[in-house]
Amino acid sequence: MTRLTIEQSTTRPPRYPGVVEDLDLDSWQDAPHSQWAFAHVSELVPTATIGHRPRTDSGVDRLTALDDVADLRALLADSWTDAFLVQRDGRTIAEYYRPGFAPDDRHLLQSVSKSICGILVGTLVDDDLIDVGRTMASYIPELDGSAYGDATVQQVLDMTVAVEYEEDYRNPESHMQAQDRIAGWRPRRDADPSDTYEFLRGLKANGTHGRRFQYCSADTDALAWLVEAVTGERYPAVLAARVWERLRCAQDATITVDPSGFASANGGISCTAGDLARVGWLMLGGGTIDGRRIVSEEWVRQTMAGGDREVARNLLIQREYARVSYRNQWWSTGNDRGNVYAVGIHGQYVWLDPQTGTVIVKFSSAPDPVSAAGNEIHARLFSEVCSALQD
Image (cartoon, rainbow, N blue to C red; front, side):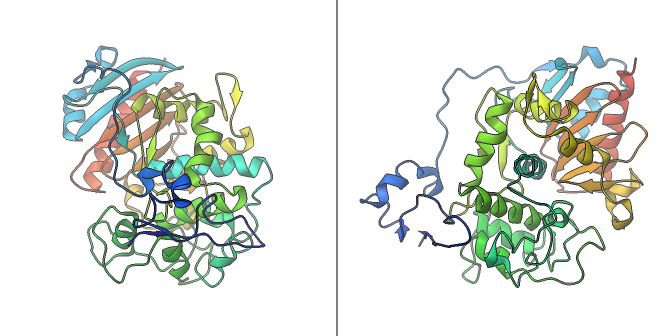
């Protein structure tokens, strides 16, 4: 039985603002439950989108501006490309959409969603709603005793939390697959936690925070809980108001939610390539886009500068970028070009090239979540495109 509950707390807003107690699939159509449920059906019952405008053509191939890139189409084909968009100084100079996929189609971002969460947290830091030096439990008392209780917000942002968590996308017994099941991405097991809140509370520390980088999708969901705690609003609503609407994106994005309505901040956003490119322009613009400030220049500067390289050890991506680091949910290559990027499994990217003022968006459906071969072909692709655009 799917169940939504509300908890009153003197230390933070209700967990599910506006939700009636004991709302479930048996009662959601009845008053007083229906007042909330009728406006949030997609959080209770699987839904499909009914488009509001004619679908654009699929199979777009406009790559002539990149004719200097050797074997470009082979690189795109070999990396299972669904969409490839190159913009320079805000103008589209090249784009490709595979047959069956159109410019106005949304695509799952996977962990590129994490980097968008990092921007959102930055806006709350700017407004003094979050102090990155404080512990997570000081904002969310329910996390006391978990891995996140005594971790600072900055440690969660930089993924230096020492947490017992296995980020294995193929292992059914891993924490990652358990998180997928709770989020509704895989069939549930009887012993699974009821929702993401319970899952996060149950994660335990396995060392001292801050000593090493540990890529952990649960960290981003802990940040989403923090967003809800300091605003009293659901994560999708805060993300829309503080980021998506201010970006003036052409289309709505979507985000998956678990049975409690907890949004999958770690990987659940879907949007168009053109709208995702605006996230890149926000970063290259130092936190502004089209003259509007969304997040502070200082937050973007810190993010683009990268994190502590000494804590990043034995990472597969270091075969391509030996000086790679992680800061505020974004990756920094540490290379001479200053490339910074957001990445999701199976080949989702936002690539920033400050030298040429270029944003590259790539959607893919690669068969392997992560691989050395995938890292190599994308490193080559982005390097050759940016070099071809060098004045």
